[in-house]
Length: 153
Length: 209
Image (cartoon, rainbow over all chains, first blue to last red; front, top):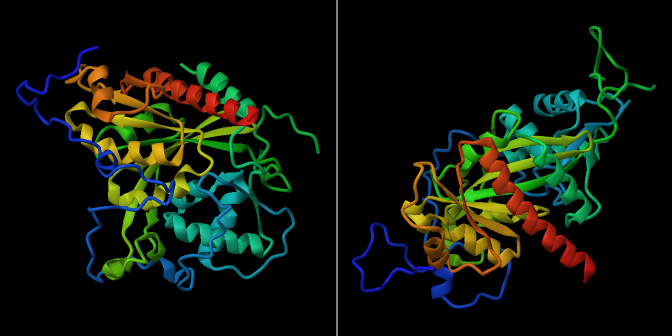
């Protein structure tokens, strides 16, 4: 094992010490707080106002609805008056089970917007949202993924 | 109604089968591909995905940004980030999603959602810009998500060897540091298999405890 000698000439783009190693141990996990660097404050010229579609709601999305969560239509759901966006979501889900992220990508809807609308449609009895019982993946499932991956070439 | 699962059950002739979508939705699992800008995340996702990578846009919402910090009160405007992802159907009942996430510190707000339920992560590293992956490594360490450091050898050579990368990242001994080529499916598959190995270790540990 060779380590760079500190007396050697500095190699190009020599890595610095990782920020959290400098700042000592952090006790909280998750809830990552950005430090130092912040997104540029954008002037209020956002051309896209996606949350108009959700009547201004930016939260209220069901925390159970993840990006990969599968969505299907409720068979025989009563017809109801839907907005163009929600109608498009239902139409996509009619084809086959689909993830929230795929709905977002294929309809070019912001992910956050999509989650809120899917939550609305679930509440309205139009969509089934297949929330997983266990949050942590079990070994059997991982083994199946490993076998599946090994079989591709 | 009984259908042969090997045929497309959605369409019979030109008519849609009554009932629409199959009732049974597959179980989704996901792996995160993280790293700095331009290190090859999208290439990695595209190499393994059975569909052309899709892009979803996520909005940074007000509560995601230091809302308790009065100094940051002006940060409420939304910032949109694009995220690429791909899909790999393992079988009829299991689908693997591979999400490429913007790795810059300022996009970290998205990661809590992203890692929830994830099997593990592949941190893609460009040895010319090792620093770019620090936020990802920090995040996954703190979140307790199994991860693997994958040095992308897109030029066919490494400016640093893997021991030097490990030294620079100061990751735990049990975190694998490997090299792979994001352009090749087999190479990406092998890298993901190392991630899954780590995920399996953790899942077995958690189950037995």
